[in-house]
Length: 161
Image 1 (cartoon, rainbow, N blue to C red):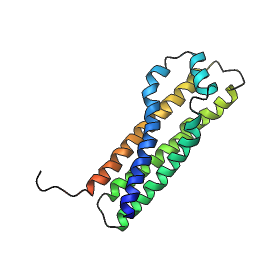
Image 2 (cartoon, helix red, strand yellow):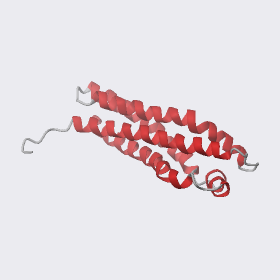
Image 3 (cartoon, rainbow, N blue to C red):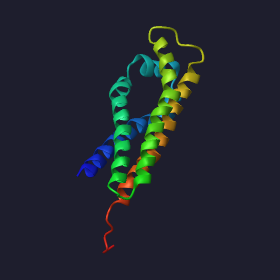
Image 4 (tube, rainbow, N blue to C red):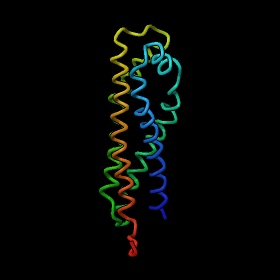
């Protein structure tokens, strides 16, 4: 029962984490065409992503913790899918590391823009922020696929199909 409950929570948290990242990815084509006033106004000064940084961060961290627990439980119970569950945990952890490496430094710079001037090279920061989120979305999508595959690896085969 513990394994099944952990799988459920892992799938839910991974889906929520992926949804946040995929949201950024889906917006990227439009947002890369926005001018300074629209992009900076909504992204930096408008607080559009405020909940991503607070609630989203908690979901991301919880997801990684639960995925690590899931891989452990799959192995301890001798169930198939351990390697896939481990890959899922590693990829979601990598997504979190990539956020710290690619996105966080830009967020630190953005904090200076809230009440201050926007630098002339603001598009360089925009590109790093947008593409950083896109890379994270791709990594988490592969991680989610590994998670689903790990669950399916332990699904009994129906002899009638």
